[in-house]
Each structure stands twice: as structure tokens, then as C-alpha cells.
Amino acid sequence: MAIDQDKLTDFLHRFVGDLGATMAAGNVLVGDRLGFYRALAGQPMLPRELAERTGTATRYVDEWLRGQAAGGYVEYDPQTTTYSLTPEQAFALTDPDGAVFAPGAFELALGALRSEDKVTEAFRTGAGVGWHEHDDEVFSGCERFFRPGYAANLVANWLPALDGVEAKLRSGARVADIGCGHGASTALMARAYPNSSFTGSDYHEESIIQARKRIAEAGLGGQVTFEVASAQTFAGGPYDLVTSFDCLHDMGNPVGAARHIREMLAPDGTWMVVEPYAGDSVTDNLNPVGRVYYAFSTFLCVPNALSQDGGYSLGAQAGEEPIRRLAADAGYTRFRRVAETPFNIVYQARP
Ligand SMILES: C[S@@+](CC[C@H](N)C(=O)[O-])C[C@H]1O[C@@H](n2cnc3c(N)ncnc32)[C@H](O)[C@@H]1O
Image 1 (cartoon, protein in one colour):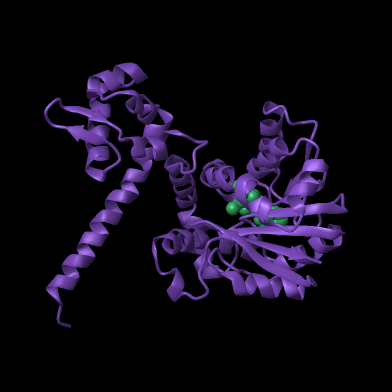
Image 2 (cartoon, protein in one colour):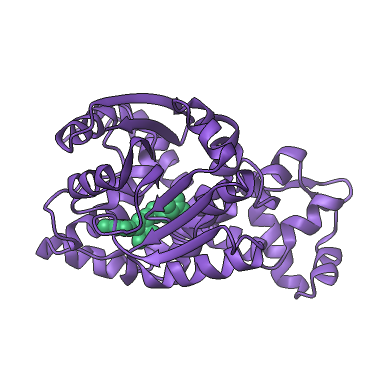
């Protein structure tokens, strides 16, 4: 087979970039955990100064900084031999409450990669790998990956886009947040709507333990309760609003969940479905965001769905049509796409 040298060079460039990014992922977490980004955001520093400021060893810090500069995550000034962050790098690397938080995404990725052997074996057997079987970093990384997008959009844009829901939340509504993980979305809603009450649920007990801790620390315990329950069995209706954040596509029986949600809704209630951003076809998703989601989906979403009863596995790039069909199959009469961001699409389904 003849090799086209230009095409090979293009591919090698891509591969070297990916290899560097793969190794750099661990370095981003090191920088986050040791406070390097936060220290550098304040002022340019020599490696020795950064090491002193963070109580770390200079030789390691020196090597870390060089790699970060090569990857464009920090800036290097050859005149002063100092390293610094641009405002944009600081924005994406230092603020867990900002609109983008890159270290959280890398934590999720590294946590997921720890299951590489289990996932490889699952390809052979076709068996599932449950969410609960992954490394703890998957759970905390998931929270840190998704929370910034929710913080930026949930209260400001997504809830106001639903029919009449915001007014109900202001005056006092009953809300169920299913598949809530560590409860980041539950806490954001509870803080914004003090007259409403919230029940978060997830089948994963360890996540619910963390969610309870976080809500108590936030002083929102009076408004929020959590239960260990699947989306197909959670209790306590009728609810004015049921929310599912980035979890419907993870379920083995999403139609069963949709039916149960409908039964738990008040007659005038609303199900807000937040799902990963996706186009309508595979071709539409062959882009950087699609690549991120397909890769996570292969390690986390599809294996989890296959570990549960139901025989469904939507995957993280299902797109609008399968969700619309699923809502219709579960008996919802009204379905509308209400909002989107580069990472999420928000749908409203009503009985
Ligand atoms: C990608 S995480 C999203 C967590 C959280 N909603 C968030 O946005 O941070 C998917 C969550 O769905 C939960 N999950 C998966 N299958 C479930 C099911 N059948 N019933 C309830 N929760 C489920 C997992 O335990 C996990 O917490």
C-alpha cells in the first residue's frame, strides 16, 4: 500500500498532540491539587518561587512548568525566565465555580481511564460496568466537570426557559432531582429557590452520602433531602418539577424511568431533561465535543447502561430524536427543546 507522506505527517502531528495531551492530563491534576495554577494566577514566578509558595520541590516544579508551557497551559518569558497565567488560562484553570473548569474535566477523564482493564474485558463479554464500579475520581470529577455549566446556565437560562416553572419555584414547588450524583444541581436550585423543597436521588449510595455532606455544609439541609433510589423507583410524588441532569442516557431502562417520572409528576408538572450536546447523526458529532463525549460514553455511559436491566443504551451522543421518541413512548404529550450550550441540550417533557 502506497503511503501518502503528507497524510502520514498530518496524522503523526495529531497523534503527538494527543499523546502529549494524554500525559499532560495527570500534570493538570497535579497543578490543581498542589495549588500551582492558583499561585501563578497571582503573579509571574520563577520555578523556585512557585515551589516555595506551594511547599513543593523545585526540581519537580521546574519540569512541570516546562511541560505546561509547551502545552500552552502556562506562559514562559525567556527574558525573566518566569512563568505566568494569562487571564484566560487563569479563568479556565483556577475557578471551580466559573463557567469552565478544566481540572475537573481531567479528573473525570483520569478516573474513567483507571477502569481501562474492566472496559476492555467488557468489550469481550458484552457485560456492563456499573457507575459504582469506577474509581472515586469519576464521581468527584463528574461533579467538577458538570457543575460549572450548571452554575452558569441552570438558574439563569434553563429553568426560565420552561413553561411556567420559574414562577412555581419562586412561590414554592416540590422538585425531584433524579440521578443527582453529588447533588451539584440540587444545591444550585435549592439556593436559588428558598421556598421550594427538593429531593435528590441516585442509585449509587456513595454519591448520595457525598450529596448529603455537601448540602449540610452549604446550610441547605432544611430544604433538601436525598434518597438512594433508581430513576425507576424514586418516591415522594406528586412533584411540580422532575429534573435529570446528564444521566438519562446512562440508564439501562430510560423508558421505565420516563414512565415512572410521569407517574410522579403532578398533572401540570414538568420533566426537565438535561442531556449532553449532540447532533442528529454520527457525522454531526465528528467534532471535538463529540470526540470527548463518545470517549466518555465508551468508558462510562454505555457500560453503565449495559449493567442495568432494560436492554437500552442510548450513549452520550444520542441527539434529540431518540429522546423525543422515548418521551412519546412513555406517554408524554408535549416535548420541546428549550435551551442549549456547547456541552448540553435541555428538553422539556410534559404529561
Ligand atoms: C454522569 S453522572 C451525572 C450525575 C449528576 N446528575 C451530575 O450532573 O453531576 C450519571 C449519574 O446517573 C446515575 N445513575 C445511573 N443509572 C441510574 C439509574 N438507573 N437510576 C438513578 N441514577 C442512575 C449514576 O449513579 C450517576 O450519578
